Image (cartoon, rainbow, N blue to C red; front, side, top):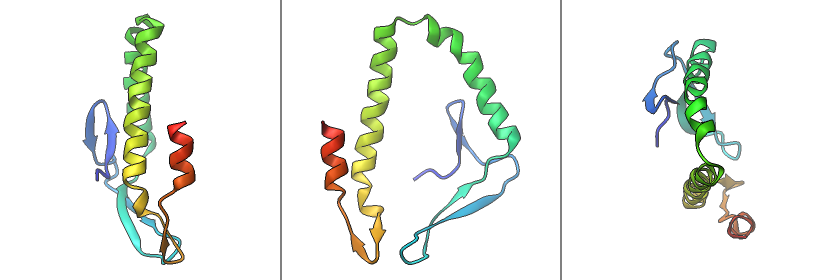
Length: 104
């Protein structure tokens, strides 16, 4: 699992090099240590997005919809695949309700 910042197609640490822990609220264990973004990191990401916008806006609506649909499919597939990470009070849940909602 990547834990750095994703900017302009590359994974990279935050400008400060700082990281913070993501804590499991059920048992207070550390799930991951992730990059901490700074204002400079946010500005870099916004600059890249702003530069890409004219090309994106020029694409036909159907093409943009297909890209967004594919992104949704990838994210939901990953979410459902990793749902086992959730652990509440020592019991694992498969998130059946979420699974049903995402599948329509």
